[in-house]
Image (cartoon, rainbow, N blue to C red):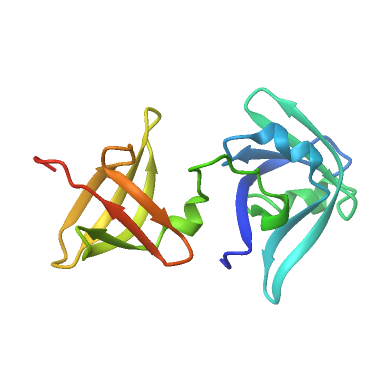
Length: 167
């Protein structure tokens, strides 16, 4: 998926008979989505734009209505489809916060020596964990805490780290 879009959820099933769908959110701030007017879904020829006609929260799910989807049969075809928002409508970041898709793929350095590539950000609850593939092919799981992650430079494509003994 292009870095211009962020996945916000997966459609689980239709809701009602007017084309609404239930969405399992994959974002930290689902309430922010009330401001979003355009959602995107992968299509054969790129990204299909769907225009929001309404949104509400129901327990741990989002109920979305799209202007383009007006009946249950059409909504049924959207099961298991991923939904995205464009970068301009993503949740705003605080200082020292980064979008996961911007972090994955960055080169990882310790003492100015490249030690590997950040492959994945694991969400653990207490703190994120960076899964780094070392240059020798081994894996390093590094907690994303200030003692370990010294500097992130998205423009330079690098993360400077201090690997604590025992990791």
